[in-house]
Length: 196
Image (cartoon, rainbow, N blue to C red):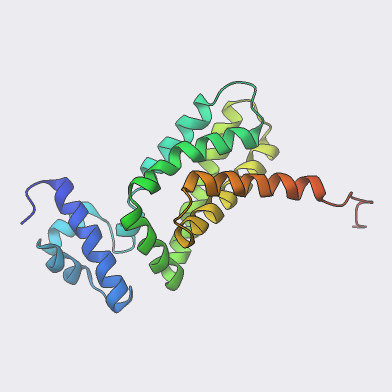
């Protein structure tokens, strides 16, 4: 039996991930996760409200890190530079937990219910990042657009990092943000607004 709450939580996460990969998310019960982790089902529900949340446990840490890093980014940076700075710092959470991050992303990609939860969590995180940008004086409309675009670049970089571990997440992030800049620089000029 795990002796501490943190150890039980970690074992529940690992057990869930193993079972989701072996059997699939839909065919795995919370009782089976608890049994594999060596705890009872009540212990599972003390740590997680449902079997989806086992894979999204770090969202609060990531949100806090992103908001802190956006707020503490050096003054005078443009919004994308602020976001690159914040995602580089917060991305260390993923890098430090790569043995869990990599299979977690694969399980989510294969499971519609988890993809739906992932999208809801992403929307919540982008709202938080937009709020932090507004706190730096970025206009509402631009803060929301920058946060959504920045999150897409972060997600793209994380996927590339999983597929190509020879480069660090930081290197993949820099590449994704450079690609964003290149796209913006090469976009054809707008010739006129469409008729309404």
